[in-house]
Amino acid sequence: MPPTPDPAGLGETLAALPLLVEDVTCEVGSVDVPTFGGARPTSVVTLRGRRTAGRGENVAWTETAQDHFAAHARVAPRGGWCLGDWSAAMREVIGEPYERAALEAAALDLALRQSRTSLFDLARVKPSPVRYVDETPGTATVLTLGAHMCKWPIGDPAADNFTFCGRRAGDEGPYCADHARIAYQPPQTKKKSSVNELARSLRRYI
Ligand SMILES: [Zn+2]
Image (cartoon, rainbow, N blue to C red; front, side, top):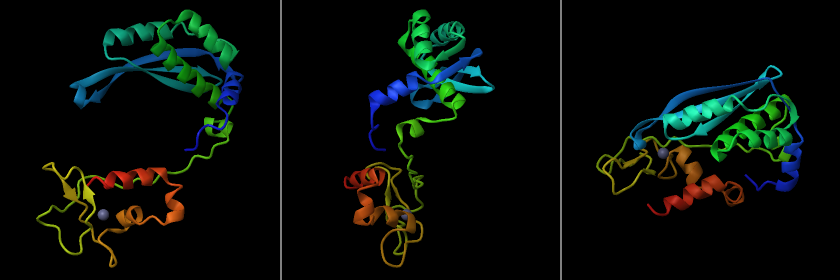
């Protein structure tokens, strides 16, 4: 994505967005984070107004912290505001920066929805679709890789679970259609596609 054209101007535009908050709810749940050792508590605050809703997530590691947030979220300001004034009023009653960030995210989400606009529209940036290739483990290993199988490496060659894609390779190269598209980007599209560039540069290490 290109850089935001005018961050200061965008900030002013956002601060001036009208916002109507009629109701605030907070739900404490959990997300599974295997590397952390199990479930991590999380809470999602929902601001509602004008029959629409905006949400923000409070990231904290303990249930105590989430309960603290849920109690605070309930005192978030209600009524009709512009987003900038609402944020200032909210800062007066909620001290924790992470809690404020979650509430601000919810308020911004709600204000954008109530004005039927989006950050992309306001920044005059076009969202560009990104094409991801499925990188689940392939079907071939060093021992089973055959002549007409895609030789795109998947994973760390030093690890036991290293595989090759293994799907049927095209007639003209070592890769299947999906991987050939990444491997042989024509020069003019290569510059535009930073995600594919990144994928290619990572491949150089393999
Ligand atoms: Zn492939």
